[in-house]
Image 1 (cartoon, rainbow, N blue to C red):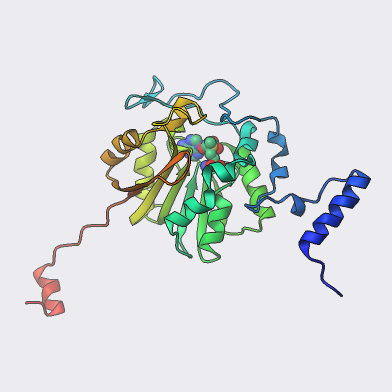
Image 2 (image 1 turned 60 degrees about the horizontal axis):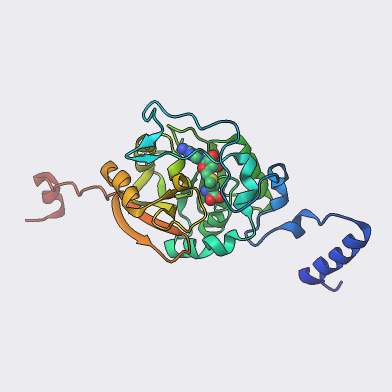
Length: 283
Ligand SMILES: C[S@@+](CC[C@H](N)C(=O)[O-])C[C@H]1O[C@@H](n2cnc3c(N)ncnc32)[C@H](O)[C@@H]1O
């Protein structure tokens, strides 16, 4: 039987569908990211460019930061799952260039990575493709509803190497010493207890593992995001470095966001004892 090109199938479906008033099948609604945006139908109320905040009252402050500030900045409210459609807005690919951002990180196949604050999986699915079958993506979020959408999106994209994890503000629920990279896109500024979070992430990374924070630039008032949902490079370094991360670089090629890369220091080499020197025959 002659094979029909997918583009032609889409065209035929579109014509027949229009005439019959049918909805396109799930595979036809799949976006460039391989994400079925229709899975987020429950969240379709959300709109606009501005990032939606919580709709059920303000985020509860942690005991560590009861006044809702950390090192001089206001901690942002957690973005509600009801605004998840905003995470799949059509303009996001141009605004945030997710593939170029991930290219720049040069993530090797087989890597074990965590997408902390994964939301509905916008980056988890892209990461899953990059690390391949031998790699793994641990996708954490605070909101079970986000993880439900993430599971649905992963199923549609046939990504079987994503493990959704329900985390809490003071415990990212990550395994110790197992991760090559932790990615947090538009999440860190929502953490109510950044110090505890960073310490746990450091513990979860392998020596020389990377922590990457992608944050809207607070230095640019033109970026249409609420101020507490932005961060300056200076503030990020001020908060992250005292935990023991080494600042590697800040990539500045995205239109609106910093891509800030830190590294967990490699374990210091153990000093050679006279016993081990004798074994290796060293003088
Ligand atoms: C603005 S959304 C970004 C989602 C995703 N990273 C993306 O770029 O599409 C922020 C997400 O971070 C989650 N979040 C906030 N604080 C968190 C924490 N401490 N641990 C895990 N998830 C968190 C929220 O529930 C929300 O889904």
